[in-house]
Amino acid sequence: MKLASCRLRIPSLPCLALVTSILSLSGPALAQDHTQQTQQILDGIQSGEQTDIQLPDPQQQLPLDDLRKFTEVFSRIKDAYVEDVSDTKLLESAIKGMLSELDPHSTYLTPEDYAELEESTSGRFGGLGIEVGMEDGFVKVISPIDDTPAQKAGVQAGDLIIKLDDQPVKGMSLEEAVNIMRGEPGSVLTLTIMRDGESAPIEIDVTRDIIKVTSIKSRMVDNGYGYVRITQFQADTGKQFTDALQKLEDKNGGELDGLVIDLRNNPGGVLQAAVETADALLDQGLIVYTEGRIQSSRLRFTAKSGDVMADTPIVVLINGGSASASEILAGALQDHQRAVIMGTQSFGKGSVQTVIPLDENHAIKMTTARYYTPEGRSIQAAGIKPDIEVKPAELTELNSRPFFSEADLSGHLEGENEDNARQEREQADQTKASPADRDYQLRSALNLLKGLHILGRKNTADSQSGNP
Image 1 (cartoon, one colour):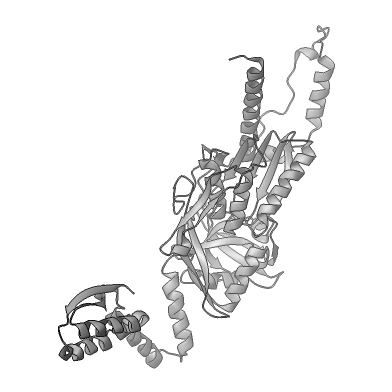
Image 2 (image 1 turned 180 degrees about the vertical axis):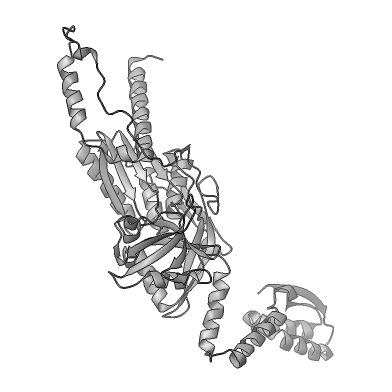
């Protein structure tokens, strides 16, 4: 509580009654330093010197009129509501309301809620497999999680859920909506959603299942070029990421010519995991910092020496489903110019939630700080803007028939490398379409990496030969 200081001139002992009355009125505000201040006042009275007394700042006191209004509403509900409501229920609802009105991410955690929070960060929980938030009273899909029932059923980032089975979402709290979405594995939930570009609501049937989230997926997308997909940041994502990079290099037989990190539809997760992932790719400098009102919410995370992919060009893919911890990683790599960020604008969740225990069974999750990138950019409600904007698109091959070439002419002049060229064409015809051939954003990232590698190789050759 903020205290205001006033100075009283106390010339003699007869004023003791006045001082005593002041102390009794402001006792609660002065309780913390009561003994020390009392002794100082008494010493001042006895010596006839000036004495400082700290009184509460009226502007910092609890608003009594509002408290009276609260108790009045509480009493009216107890007396006149159509059904009897326990005091515990009313007070718990008041706490929930206090937190939910702050922002979409602050909430009151019951024992069940806290257990579900632990499940989601450990990588195994039951439900549909979507990260959601509230927008205009409806449930908005931040992103579907890879290989989950929601993703397989066709739920997309940005979808607005307006009904769960036959129950309208409008008026529900996020907690109530999530509780409905969770259920017995094998049971079906019908989502009615509004989607950009669609003129009418869409109904999607999703079969609930036990959600097992695999944080890291990796593969080679072309000779020399690796791909790492981070679906969600979990407690051990940092170690899994470095292990995946090592496996890609082992499979390639040496350093990679380029790396794609896919953060699309990654809803975030554990902050420390994002920091560890960024640290693996940075040699030094700030990764992210947080700013809040209390000292414990002001944190700075810096990179340790050692870039495990030194000199390997990197492209990071993001979209509107990339949020929170994934934005921290993208922002750090962008500010340090360690990677090219490609795709579309990210979600823009740049706030820190802290779980504060109230007792052994209850806690609150409250927003306590904002994230900032190394260059001081706030992510909150702004997101990460890609260096190169590439919107998703469907790829259609216009003409798959081989062109008629010089080698097809009767009596053509034989070329020195004709046999090798023929074999390469035959192998290309037999090669199956890769994931990059079906994913326009991934193909764009791969093409950029190939271009950077070619330029890097040329610059290296020129410097070794002494050419300008």
